[in-house]
Image (cartoon, rainbow, N blue to C red):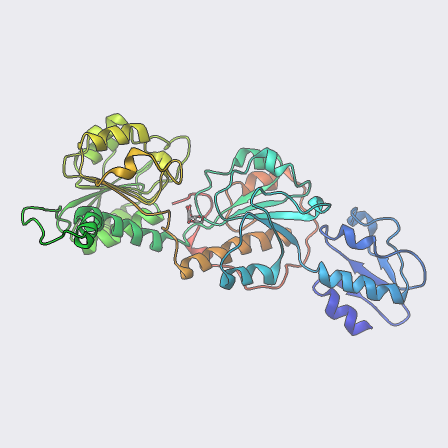
Length: 426
Ligand code: 8YV
């Protein structure tokens, strides 16, 4: 019985000497279990009740026979409960299922009768998370975003409700920079219309006067020289491009030297002086709509504008007008606003537009790294700690009394923390 207790109840605190009361210290996500531990017989008592206000008053003792039922229930509910908006591919979902009990709900609804057991949301498909969603879960501690950009989460709502918002910075920088270059090259060298032409039934031979735009030796203007922007700059150097950038604040001299990057304090000047412009900034109230009609006018007729940030960075009405007027060469983007664009949207009909379906981070290696980081954020909170990558960690910590630490559920150690800092989503 004792070894069974230890194995079933591990990693929760158990002490069971023969003939002595069994002491169980269960974390807050176990309230339902205690209904299964009626009084009588010998064996179960709680630890210091004042430390564990969730424990019911009838949950102090149970007989050895109903202890078996209790343990069976414990093993079924052994893992902390989270809600996901959609599941991962099996290889990644396995990482989640090893550590957590998962309820899947596209609308982010709790499982019936268990709303107060849900301690975390793990969100995958950019659902809106605001106070209305968070309020469905009375004991929610964390919204763990699978991705770096958190523009779909109202972080101020989460903070005021004492809920951490965590993300996965750094995990996808290289993969996303690869896609930025793929879009840039495809736009410059007419790869998409060229592919259509080469497959078309009447195709005989390419017009010898149909040209693309030269990439090597050209000037790239990177808007946002964060992690992703820097990964793009390194790739651009390999194409002998001159690297220029605009940023909220200038990067260190070392970084500028390493990337041979020239700072432009004016966005408009960067747009005027670049053959390729890549948007790699996070979307927030300061950057939303940063490329509007005035900025689009700065682009030259052969300029290619690449967007791997968020659709909302670009005013789509102004963009459509500019594309239709042929005022710059090509808009090559991984993101749109909305996503997807309505099927009748004029941008979908233009040969000057290339759209990849938000796949910047979409490789199994990168997405698995992101999953591990998102899980580490959840695991830290279960252990009573601040998530390693959070947007509001300090604020939530300073307003919330520290929870009694509970042992972290089994699982791999911390993810690639060195890659990512706090809440700067680039
Ligand atoms: C998505 C992203 O998170 O990191 C981001 O900000 O947009 C992506 O990596 C990913 O597509 C999952 O939705």
